[in-house]
Image (tube, rainbow, N blue to C red; front, top):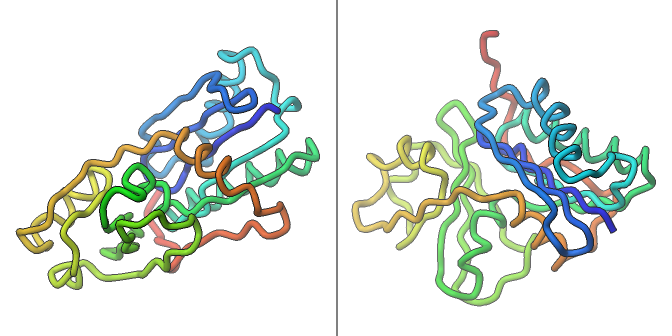
Amino acid sequence: MIGLAIDTSSELSGLALYHDHTLLAQIQWASARRHSEQLLPQLDALCRLANITPPQITTVAVSLGPGSWSGVRVGISMAKGLALANDAHIIGVNALDVLAWPWRGVCAITACLALGRGRYAIAHYPDTSWHPGTIQPHNVALPQLATLDATMICCAPFVWEQIQAVCPPHIVYLSAITPPTLIAQIAFATDTTRTQLIEPLYLGDAVITNP
C-alpha cells in the first residue's frame, strides 16, 4: 500500500507518503492562502523524493477541516481526484482531531483553528481515550474565547498570537505544529470513510480576500 496524507486546513500545509505504515517522505510549508497553486508542485516534488509516482498511490488520507475554506476545498479536491484516477481508498480526518491527537487519553484539552474574519473553530476533548470524529466542533467569535471553559488549549503559534490577549489568563497554551504524519496515524486507526462520504467541514462561510 502506498498512502498519501494531505493537510491544507490552515496556513501551514503538509504532505506525507507512506509504504504500508512506514514513512517514506514528508513536506510541510507555509502556504498562506496559496494552496491551489502550490499543492500539485509540492506533491510532485515529494513523489520524486520518495521515488513514487502518483498512480502508485492506493490510499489517501485528507483533512476535512474545519479551517481555511479554500484550503480544505483544494485538499479534498486533490484527494478525490487521486482516489478516482487510481481507484484508491480515501479517508477523511477532522483537523481539530489532528491537533488534539498527541494528548489523546493523556489530558483534557481544547483544540482551536482559525476560520477567518475573527471566527475560530474549537472542540473540547476529554482526558479519556476519545474516538476520532466523535467530538463536536463549534464556530465561535474571538470575544467568546474570553469565557472559554478550559485549562489547556492547543493551536498553531500564529493562532495563539491572535487569541492570547482574549483567552482567560489561567489557560495553558500548548504549541501545535501538526505534521501530516498525524493525519495518517488517525487514518490508520479509523479506516472507515469511503470516497463518496468525504465532505468538507467548513463551520462557516468562505472568507473573500483581495488578490
